[in-house]
View 1 (cartoon, rainbow, N blue to C red):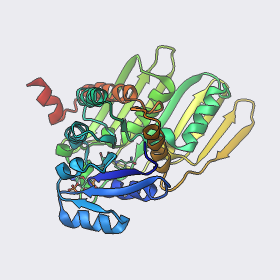
View 2 (spheres, protein in one colour):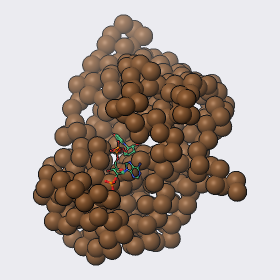
View 3 (tube, rainbow, N blue to C red):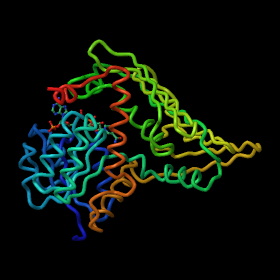
View 4 (cartoon, rainbow, N blue to C red):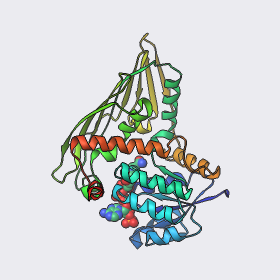
Length: 332
Ligand SMILES: NC(=O)c1ccc[n+]([C@@H]2O[C@H](COP(=O)([O-])OP(=O)(O)OC[C@H]3O[C@@H](n4cnc5c(N)ncnc54)[C@H](OP(=O)(O)O)[C@@H]3O)[C@@H](O)[C@H]2O)c1
């Protein structure tokens, strides 16, 4: 593939801005096009990031032959339809988390990407953060021994007026899919698929889960205690208890810059590991690497992982009784 990869941005909202800032840091990317349903929003984004083409429909964006890859940055419920729109038009995609509302949607997106031989990846940026890479290196070296238990939380004090998307059930709202996805992903990455899942939740009047507590039990006896909440600013920390040491991924664990390992023999190691830009740079590097090498999937966040993640989130939702329109459509 050519040296400069032309990116299209679909849905220039909050996360798209932070992501675009990191796209600008990569020497071989160009933020070539942006599409918003709102012409002013498209124009503002284009001016801010020096974007050549601005469109007021997503259809026009996917039809632009110059666009190599589209970053989908809209609320969860639109990912399924928009991923298909892009793939059917022959575009590679990086789609924000969650990839789809449920395993059915994720399966359909994955199959379409496979059939079209296009690159597709869920935006699990945590996997590419240098701090996460270090944690994997430490664990794989055997330094902390066998993983016995993981505790991880992600919570913020929400406000229905200022953080409306995360309360609006019609947009796929709730703590589990928005932020609980990070602790769940970490556990899947380090422990695999749980044998047994337990969960409970508290719901807002509109139906969004505003607190969710999750317990995983694994075949080898290890456990995970996970929490997502919009009711409190929690530590946003992950603690991995091993048979030889306890490893802490400090605040905010999903893009941690600090790791502490407390060995059972009383010694301690601390690692300070920064990242580039807002942290999305490393995910962008992976996408660029894949595109330049003709890979249709990332080996670090393969479609299979997105499927496992979606299936696990589905099971948790079944236990807490959280349904979205996307699930109901399936039953019709
Ligand atoms: N990786 C991360 O760190 C991270 C962080 C935050 C969010 N996210 C993910 O990114 C996605 C977007 O989150 P965000 O907070 O950036 O969203 P947002 O700013 O509320 O919206 C982003 C774009 O989505 C479209 N949109 C918003 N509300 C809509 C509605 N009611 N109907 C139709 N389209 C709508 C709009 O596109 P138009 O401009 O075309 O109208 C908007 O510009 C979510 O899936 C979230 O999980 C990821």
